[in-house]
Length: 242
Image 1 (tube, rainbow, N blue to C red):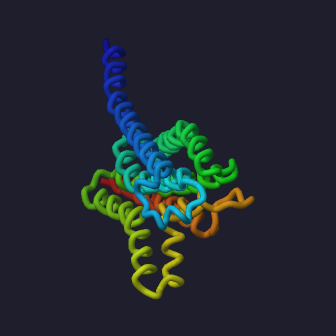
Image 2 (tube, rainbow, N blue to C red):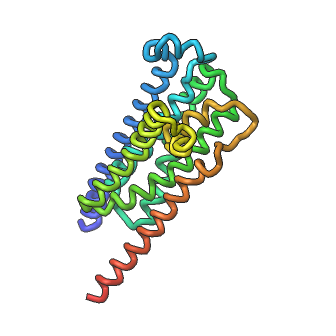
Image 3 (cartoon, helix red, strand yellow):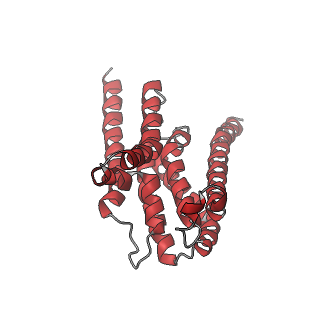
């Protein structure tokens, strides 16, 4: 009887996790499909004068940019709901989940690459950039997983500012002021615009450029992860002393 009870509890406990994974995966694929469609039929969204400057539809660019926004802005909040186990288990599950996200998107990358006349190198470059962003989202997700309202709000705000605020602010500054050269670093650092430009680049480089913009977010994610582990170990030590 006890064994049966334990198994039923484990099964019941696994259902919410499985449900959350399915919800996150479905949302990721829906966003990806919408972005691919927008890039493939960009004539419905862009002004005619902008269309004249496009040699091919920006399907791959739009796909990678939308996935970058989703990972930074929404994934930490979805990931934070998986609080079963310690930080190490959460990191492993989160890493596996993001690998699955990118793996099931391979058919979309193939279609987008064909529409955009992109090469395999272009796709690999974009995937490497998303892999770097994944490290950031895992670090943010660990902090959001504390469940504290102030921390969850801070993570959500940080994700929104990084994913949406940075490109919007840099675009407005470049269009409305003479600070184009000054704020170009912000445009390069923003995940959405960097992912778009990385996919749009044509060349032999298999890695995203500029290198600092590629390295910025995984380094930030590692710092967030170590900071969380230190804070968590300190909290556990204080509880043992009580």
